[in-house]
Length: 162
Ligand code: NI
Image (tube, rainbow, N blue to C red; front, side):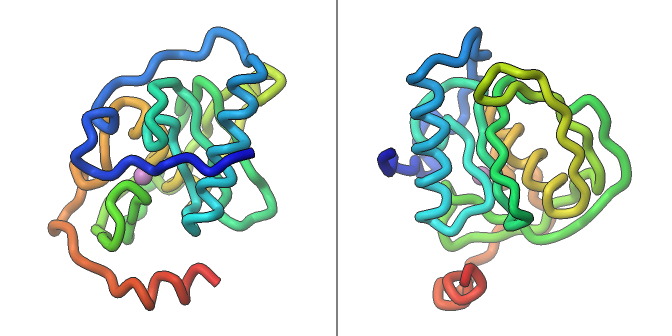
């Protein structure tokens, strides 16, 4: 496994639409492992492939519920409810903003063994799924933010990640 470089806002790769993955090769499995390692290293709860410069439809998510999800060609097939809360992104370091998302989603995605699975998310998991899937279509949360972005104290965020 290896850490990959996280692309920062302004990098054109973050605004492109990603391509579906036709089959899960060893290269894709390595990418998924690297993305998880890179996400944990940066204290993130999710990471999408374009954030490491790869325009493929794959995201990883771990909100700390003892599940590390690798979602390949993910699609939201059901969304309901509403939540309004703070969001951040590893590609926009030191910033946060308020975004309204569905409070409950059902996502269909392939796993590393190319098995089609359904993941049901509420609250933070629903938010993370929506945020990461947006990345695959070149959408950043700042495009949906309600009252503009604001700076967060980095000391505070590293404490919160512990
Ligand atoms: Ni993000």
